[in-house]
Length: 92
Length: 126
Image 1: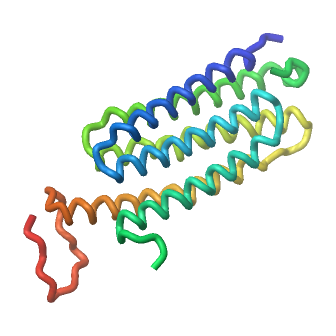
Image 2: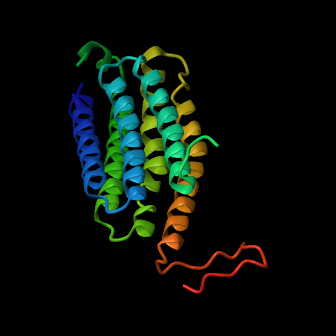
Image 3: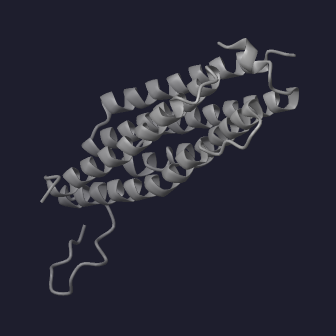
């Protein structure tokens, strides 16, 4: 039995963490507000994938709920912020 | 790390899960580097699309394969995430695009004019 997964999963975790760092960099230096919202959306998506890989790494199904919740909240927050950029208020 | 659970998988499934997860993580990194490096917002908004399509589906299928082989029965719950993401991400991206276009028109940037404006309203000539 080769320890394939024991090398592949931490490598994937490192790559996803690097991706989250890139998105954070874009969010910090993004010239306009929509750039920051897009970077936040991208970072939440990367975090969701990170949760899924973390669940594989620990061989636990509990991370699935966290990933689903993160996907849900990123959708709602991106919609709210896009609406704020469009109208200047979230709830009319 | 849980070596006992990892040792329960057959070798081909282990290689397949590793390949799918590494492919997904690499594509996610690629899309985010695109987000970081492309010059304007309207180019930048294309780059993360590969995360919500190919990268997400790769990692989700890897997860489905892993938990199915581990528990001995079909574990399709991770597909729920991919289905949800593939429904919601286009909606939020289009919404964000329209907001960015609106703001660019307000700022008189060089963007195409609004084609669906009412007939009586003055059309912006930018």
